[in-house]
Image 1: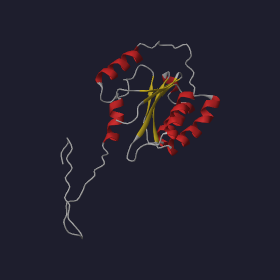
Image 2: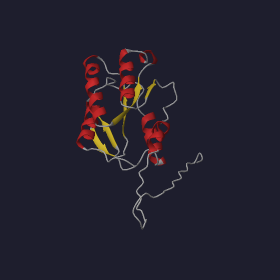
Image 3: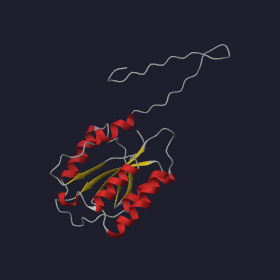
Image 4: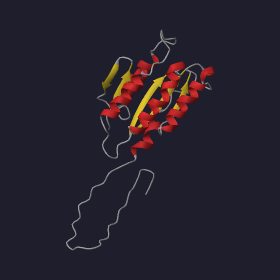
Length: 178
């Protein structure tokens, strides 16, 4: 797996488990998410966690061929926060970071300018966006991330004994067939 970091208002924390493959991690995370209060005391978003995660990506370049993603769970930003979002999106793009945004808000906020800005942010970075009010199914994060797992780097050392053009045959087989 790549580097996994949890970004929250409390700061950044390296994750040891891979949420995509560790079923107990996913189960525990989903239980914790569902245990959150329906009306949190401070539902207003801040961009601090997003900025910190992007800053970390900028400071730690990814290995060649690595896809970098950030899952940002937030409510739609408003006012000055909304105006700061394009700069953060630009920084994420430069760092090769795809933003996967899960926006939690009442259904009435799904079509607001803020929601549209989050949709654009995810699209501009090659990520995904989902709006969630509690009535919809929880977004399938595995489905979001699975297409990004299909890149492989192959190294081959030739055993040819003569110089010049050589023929090499390669066959790639996936679970869906050749």
